[in-house]
Length: 394
Image (cartoon, rainbow, N blue to C red; front, side, top):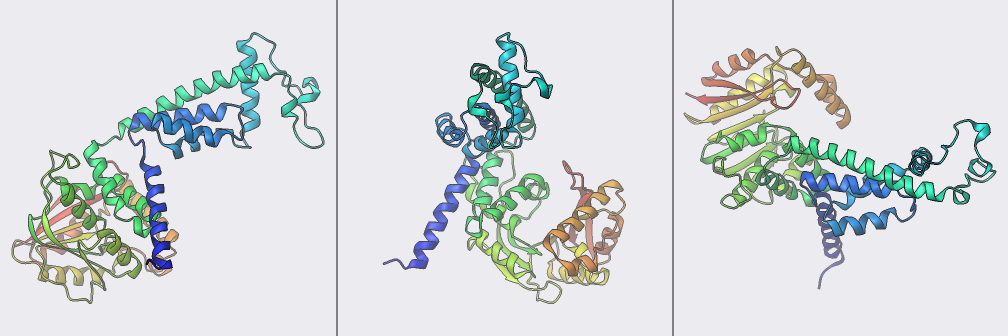
């Protein structure tokens, strides 16, 4: 017999899965544009109180996203509703070739004015104008905004296999909460480093991968999801096969490490430890993605020395950091990091600040430790001047 905590956990899990499915349904650009168009048309109708059921039923019938449809229907919020109604009536009068309403307060009919209790909406004499205008204006707004939505989404559309890989990776974090799912999805969609590691075959085919400062374990979860989907239609055909690696992550933040364990679902070992003090196991590849700039300059050197010692000859170190000589791109990184630290309320990091180096400065640190390094830009599609440094132990 199931215990009460177990039943509560299963109920919470089912609710999260339901919300997740509602979030991702109708995910193609055409269906998302249709959801926006449908929601705007419903929001323009004067059927107040029925907008929610109309959105749910019609979106379900048309196979579009119900949540996005209802959000788009909020064009008729209390703030916008008076203006919307006015333009609908004016549009109806224009279509029906009737005199337009005057904008002069003295010429507004009494039944249109505010009385002691409310605006006498239900006593309007222009229901025909309102109905005709709501249909005309609703169709126009739906067509315009739906087309604009489609064009914008089409420009940023990824192949279906890549979208499936993003969703499969984000789905792994359901037990950590929908917020974590959205954070993972956002990182995979907008940060180019994750798919670069997987798409181009930058990682070794086998051995052990150590992710220092793994955070939520997004890289490791992506590799696990890619391994599950490889060989199916849900894996991009033109990508390198995913590596078969023993996955290990280390992060100093217990909360982030706990989230990583949930997302990895036993596919990797995640330890809570300080990379500057904890023993580093030998690894064929080590990742330092956005880690070094959080450390003091002396600690940067010490950590890289420890990492170089943990690599065998031919071992690979991948470092993603900012280029401090990159002008506006580097300024964007500084502002972004400050804002993120403020949102996290990490006052210790705020006081300590960040310690960036130029591209040549990072290379000097690595070559001084017997590593042969090359640099690739890693800011494509973003305003940030990041670089990805691949360093091999000689």
